[in-house]
Image (tube, rainbow, N blue to C red):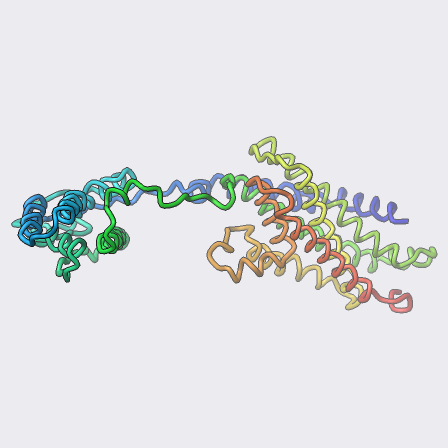
Amino acid sequence: MIIPFIKKDLLVLLRNPQELLVLVLMPIVLIAILGFALGGVMNGDTETISVKVAFINHGEEQEDIDAFIGKVKAEGLPLEAETALIEGANQLRPIQILLDEVFGSKELREIVELKQTEPDKLDEIKNDDSYAAVIEIPENYTFDILSSALLDEPSTATIKLYKNEGKEIAPKVVEDILVSFQKQMTSMTVIGKAGLQLEEVGSARLGEIETVTERDPINSLQYYSVGMSVMFIMFIASHVGSFAYREKQLQVFNRIILSNTSRWSYLGGIFFSVMVISIVQQAILYGVTSLIFDVVWRDLLGFFLVNLSLCFAIGGVGALLTALNFRIDSEGVSNFFGNVMVSIFAFLGGSFTPIGETSSVIGTLGNFTPNGAGMTALLQLLQGVELSSVVHHIFYLVGFGLVMLTVAVISFPKRGDAI
């Protein structure tokens, strides 16, 4: 008795072209608009930061190194210790490291324009608004660093940073670079005090960095193909719930009951109708996005299981909306769900933007919505994770659908209340 009800609901939907446009055409249009409009943002193709920095050094690093070596030789240390300190001084060149390895690195060269300037031009540069920051190295800086790192003497070396407060991001970038450099110098100081050779530390492989999972990046078209699909699948539950209530108003439901058909068959028909329509909708949407936008699913089994469980969950929602509409004798529940709850669920689930990445609380709440759980699982499959990594989302969606269906059965009016 279930199949005739499914056929009935499919025919009702096919005879309503406006509903078909909402469920099929609109998500495809939104995928195209959002995917191409926000492609640069999601792919990280934002405008590169340009930072102009003046570098002023009041001393000469080689002179400081020579002065330190002279100081070491005057200490009368054993030859082995003296040789080690001299080698350490020749290796630990903080200003050279800052210029060549930090600001001279490939990454920073692309965003930082560093200009070495004479000290007498400091006031002129500080009044030049084109500079984001000025780095000032005091006299005897290298000598103080070497004395602290290798001879365990107190250090008074301080780098001055003048920031252009008229620029918002660039000065902060330079400040972060110097803070990182300071931490590096501190590490070298600890190493020196421990009696380790800096050359050995520099060449030694202290560890290996590995990523926890190797995942493919998600582009905007892939993201919104999933986001819009899991969002518009929820409208099916709302539309079918409204159709069912209109059948009650037109006495169709009463005639079905009078024909000795079980009301549970009718409710089960609603549940499976929503499931079938959802499967058809998802097949159309993902088929179109695969052909037009090249959204390819490598794990077809995982893709099928996640979508089937999502359709099962939405089927439970459709049955519950129908039961509540019949219970309160109004289609207000379906309308409220379609007009309000779908938008809230879509926001929490990340259909419009990956908001879960900015807030762990919202991310957790989003995964408790059927669309959010389905979207998370589908995006992970697109990134190449194993099916076992998303199976908990599948179990949650099936459990969610069973809970919704159980509440629908409890809420559905008895025979005496149905007519």
